[in-house]
Image (cartoon, rainbow, N blue to C red; front, top):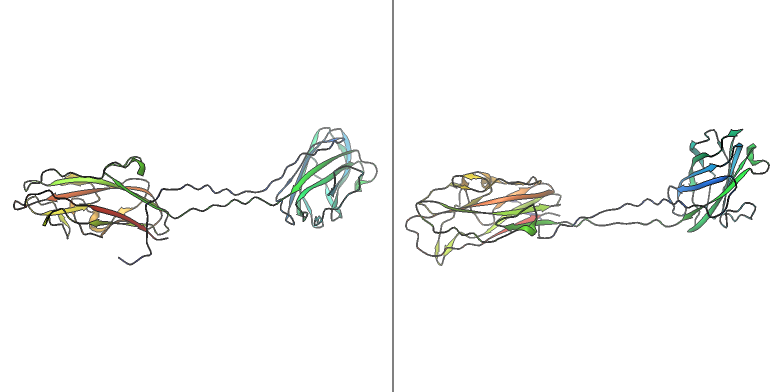
Length: 350
């Protein structure tokens, strides 16, 4: 197997919620108004000096002849008739008018970098008509803080004469909140005699008792392995350990692939459902990993320490493998208590 940059880990799985924030400011006006109610302004982006959109929405309370609207942006307050402090950095010079609703025949006239007039052919509109429109290509003020729009309606074009309705709006410029997070690399692997619900916390047991070995029949057992990773190249799973031994006496392992042969010395494993002997199960779970090579053949068994026994070539969801163990002895096998310890290692490249 080619050498790879491996991390051998056994960790809990973390779920990360990544939240992207789009700043939207909607502030109700705090001043009284005559004839214009339910006022709001929504900024597409509220960062200083950012070129963005402003969407206005309001209701004309009374039945009126409307020929124009004026919008004056001020830094100090929204009150008609007060001196207007110009917001530093605000620039409406390249503003465009889109998405008109309620009244849809306004045309835009830029009076100054901080003042606009919306003109139309004067005509009567009904009471409680709700208007909305969007100004694009507006450059925000260059300072963080609260700013104001003085909105007035006129019966004539170009804001000539006295206003027939007016109201104030407020908006805020601020630094947007940025939230970030990291999904850590992980590979999770756990073992047990049983593992339920693809959950390592449910793993139970670490001991298999083959009972009394006999030359007349095979002995078998099984355990389970659960593995998952977000490694871009997936994982490989290896087995480490020795065959069964009692002092200096051993049961020879199947160093080459072979079926069960009662009456001969054999120790081997595979990761499939077998019928001879009846033991094991095929891999299950939402993952796509598979046993590989000789460990993927039902009714044939093999054991060589450090062999790769299963793998996935991509990030993989939980995959539950069942390891089948086969033991056979011949009639000359010395008596004793035979023991082996096997270790399963999952490795991924990150």
